Amino acid sequence: AQTVTQSQPEMSVQEAETVTLSCTYDTSESDYYLFWYKQPPSRQMILVIRQEAYKQQNATENRFSVNFQKAAKSFSLKISDSQLGDAAMYFCAYRRQLNTGTASKLTFGTGTRLQVTL
Amino acid sequence: EAGVVQSPRYKIIEKKQPVAFWCNPISGHNTLYWYRQNLGQGPELLIRYENEEAVDDSQLPKDRFSAERLKGVDSTLKIQPAELGDSAVYLCASSADRGYEQYFGPGTRLTVT
Image (cartoon, rainbow over all chains, first blue to last red):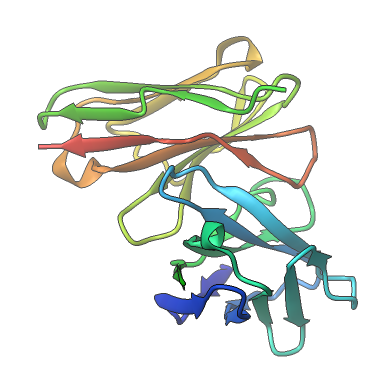
């Protein structure tokens, strides 16, 4: 079974600074997707960024980027120029690439609460 | 385009009472998911539908939980009877056929007293 571990329950960053959230995962699969979701107090999970395991290039979406280390099974999220609106719970998630059987299920970590201070 | 709609947003019930949650996925999305999120945890899949068919319900406690997706559109998740441990947020998500991006609704926070 796949597992996702987020070892930082809480992180804090000052506005306009950069912060990195850590995520490690365990899988025997070679093809899969990795995601970072943001969950504000409204509870709605919002996709921040995704990474296909077969791609060596790290994904980037505006101020959000990832450091994907496939051999180390590590997938960290870097938020640059942090804004007050970035404050939320952040979840790392894993999904197998093949869309058959249970393949499309997302496996989540326990989350990291990000606080953004002035 | 409207997102995933869920109702109610909040529900408080006494243990042993029944409760139902409703989800309307994004139009055209064939795959629908119900997740349960316990306090301080990430969501965990309860059941996944491909159109009307439940293709993954291995984590659904079938003695008290049931779900249906009539006509392959909206879905209802029911708990009967509810237990204290069922207090959680119940999230619904949908994705396009064989699409990998899941879109989530705002969830229903259930409190069982």
